[in-house]
Length: 385
Image 1 (spheres, rainbow, N blue to C red):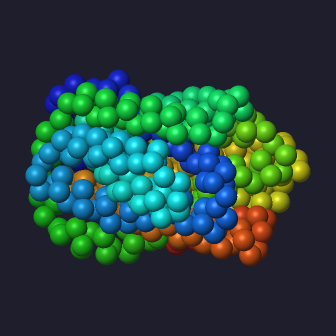
Image 2 (tube, one colour):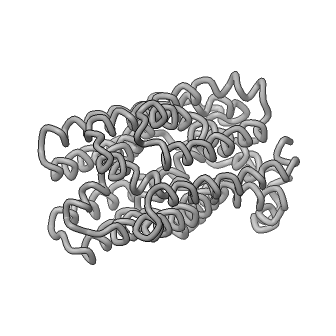
Image 3 (cartoon, rainbow, N blue to C red):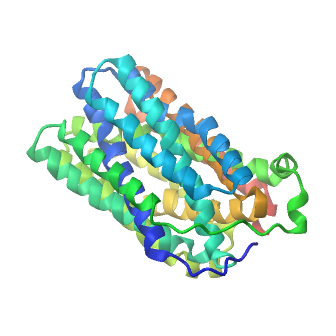
């Protein structure tokens, strides 16, 4: 692994993560409610929300290739942040399905550039100390919590259109911090980096890992698209929904900050097995347990495993598989396949499922997808090394 001699810009990286995930904290839980207020049906909402993932199938790979070939990671992040802000402003001009779809697709194309390159930059600064990744990424979770709770109360007190201005504020924060992070420099190329990226990707354990992560992202599709709508329809207030989202992310923060200790005690494969097992249980609890608030609360606690522990372990494996000159492309592959393909399938299929099967069966399908991912992780023992 490469080692960067520059001091770690802890707070600058943390600030970027804070606003990036604050944007998600305002957008993911409540954007479906905004779309519903425009009288779109469940299928249309599923299609629109899936656009955030569709562009992540190809955009991160394009941005990652450009970054690795130009060595200008941070410049690309800055340009993408500016263009993402400009494209988002289109949301204020029209409310038709086609217009909103175009705005969301364009915004997502630029937004998808940032995180894989920031992840590669963060891991480059950490070098051999990748177990400390969670303590920087954890500030993103803090931003998510403050946004999801704050916006929840804001929407209780005002109109749903207040969401548009809150999201705009977080986009401005992303742009500001994109200019604060110093460049980590060129990655150190090792002799083992000579393998073509396609050869690395085709290794059985790498394919199994990516397939499992795709299934995990797909399993979360109904959660990110319809969870807030579902709970509001079941009688939960918007502020309560915000607190439930915040509970899950608060537990995620705890896991991120405990990851150095956990990774010394357990190997990456054991952490992934636990994460996928929790996801299977969690989606069954959400699908069938809304009449019991304690069950829904417990399901949110499991977010610590299904997202927090899973993501931190996945980042370690991506960094292990794709090092040196392949680092940004490896991050882009992970984002494109897991969150791009997986998120798109989860979003679109959740729209179909919600309309034709209902919430409970849709979340049961999510649990089944997580179980399939678990079987792949159990099967490939090489992930331990």
